Amino acid sequence: MLKPTLGAALVATAALAHAANPITSKIFTADPAALVDNGRVYLYVGRDEAPVGGKDYLMNEWRVFSSCDMQHWTAHPDGVPFSTFKWAARDAWASDITKRNGKYYLYVTVEHKTIPGKAIGVAVSDSPTGPFVDARGSALITNDMTHETEISWDDIDPAIFVDDDGQAYLYWGNTVMKYAKLKPNMTELDGPIHTVGLEAFTEASYLHKHAGKYYLSYSRKFPEETVYMTGPTATGPWSYGGVIMEQNTNVKTIHHAIVDFNGKSYIFYHNGKLPTGGEFRRSVAVEELHYGPDGKILPVAQTAEGPAANPSTACKR
Image 1: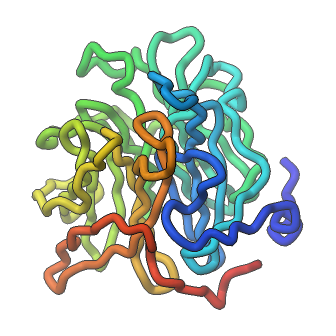
Image 2: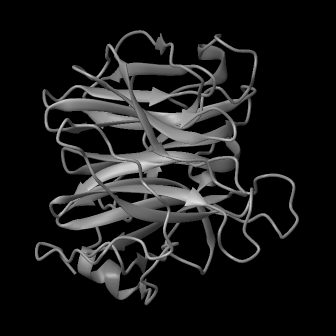
């Protein structure tokens, strides 16, 4: 793989003057994943391409944005098409990203060509902005590997978490949450697939750690709200914490990601608030996230303003 310098990549990008929610009004975006690296936050989104009045998701690629201050976002020119995975038939549904050993691993949801149902693939790059290539040449998770439900979309929404001891975990699922350990190569399961019973779990599981505590958040019910649980390890046991974000008004989903950046915490999510926006024409936004003195996540309201500027002096421009 070629390893372009970040400076060269940024020369080829278009800086967005937009400094409010959503993070871009140029295209419709959904299902945010985020990564903080070298003082810059990178945002990975699926591109909604359904026409006005469309009745289904039309998503063919993931797009990458980045920011040094959580207000002004740079659109990187090269997306990641679902065709990166030759075994995929269509769709660029929810993804997640992590860095390990100097490489960037992007876990994605696509439709499999030959095994009916949704599948999870993993791509790798030497740069957070790509180019990404298929790390396996085959799916990591396919619908025939799990049998908890009869639906064909129960293997979606991958979330990747690397614990302090170096153990990587993959979380995913619809209706039933599943998780598995990954081998250090980040492209193979290391042991069995486990299921977790969560109250009214729908999808979009996400794990992060704050002040020594593990936070498992997910989309609950349908239409969805974002809730969280806490636990002493990356696999629980889990105790209910509360609602982070209420349901959207004109979009049934609300997929999220949580990161720490430059001394503050943030939650990304999507809604349908752009003109002509809605169920299949969504927009990713971001808010600052706060914890109470007891470690509880405080409820987050959606705003048009978004978070205050938080410029990072460590950001490599």
